[in-house]
Length: 296
Image 1 (cartoon, rainbow, N blue to C red):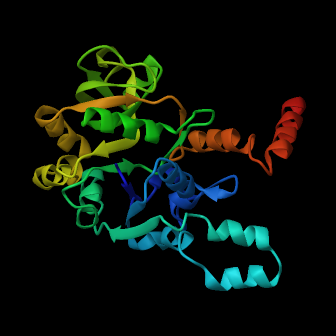
Image 2: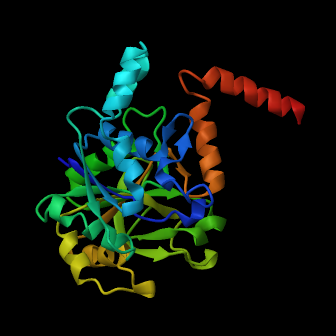
């Protein structure tokens, strides 16, 4: 069973500027919670018990968010704000650990994952979740990460989550080439390769990599051997290509929806999706939306 997850959060968040100048992009809020909390909740719902944040000196707010805040909790208790106090005390369950390691230099996603090696070890599989992307599994019996973990356990092969995107937009994504037919949503198929941002006419499929991976501990040795590419960065996809050749890797086609919160329109779409069904603010938000639509 996969119990550990790596969340690379060391990036500077230049796509989110100016909002991310003074606060980590992962701490920008969707309704009433920061983006990073949604991603951690996704991992916890899939059975993850240890979360490794690969972070940077400027990202202390992320670690603080998941830490105990004694003074704030004491103040809330004294003022009788017990409901809010309980919410703060249960941002993560008691049996889930948050561990931080530093990425000293911005040397690519592969390098960020490699920084987690001392915590994860080489002998067990783990998940990687990119916190720019929110995966919305509303209406499903289990979230897509849990489904992908099941596929990993059944096949014994690494899994990369993919989403079907419009053919005219494939140039924006890493696109997977499959060995056979496209799998149905909630199922996996063997991969041949990943093609980074292909031309529309050259794309091997319309299945885009969306930032969720299940990888074996052996990926660390491959990353350590991977030569830096453009910009001196170590790319995770290079190690995955080697993994495909040696062990095989499968593409898991997700069932839910994604929101790219590293992009302003994706962030706004996430707010719309989560706000309209929020248990406390949903009804009021929908009234606001109807008012603005009527004014237009």
